[in-house]
Image (cartoon, rainbow, N blue to C red):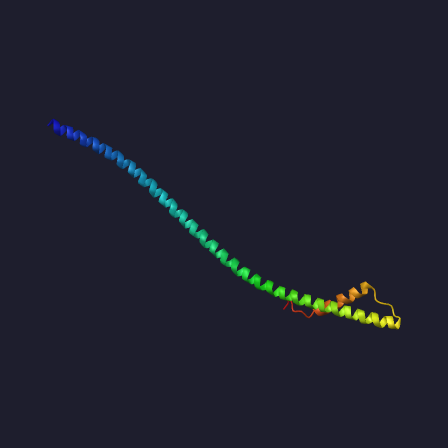
Length: 137
C-alpha cells in the first residue's frame, strides 16, 4: 500500500509537471499563431507593393519607349536643321564671295557683317520653315 501511495504521489507530481509544460507549450503555440498571422499580413502587404511596383515599372517602360521614339524624331529634325543651316551658311558665303567680286569690279560697296548675318538668318528661316516638326500637324 505504501508503495502504491508512493507511485500515486510520483504520478501526481509528473502530472503537475506535465500540466505546467502544457501551459508553456500552449503559450508558445499562441505566440507562434500570432506571429504567423502577422507574417501573413506582412506577406499580403508586400505582395500588393510588389504588384504596384511592377505596374509602375511597366508604365515607366511604356513612357521611356515613347520618349525614346520622340527623342529619335527630334534628333532627326535636329540633324536636318543642322544640315539646312550648313547649306544656308555655304550659300550665304558663296553669295557674299560672288557679290564681293562683282562689287569690287563694279566699284559697289560690300555689305556689312550685320547685313550678311541678317541674310543668313532670313535664308535659314526660309529653309527651316519647310521642315515638318513633331507635333506640328
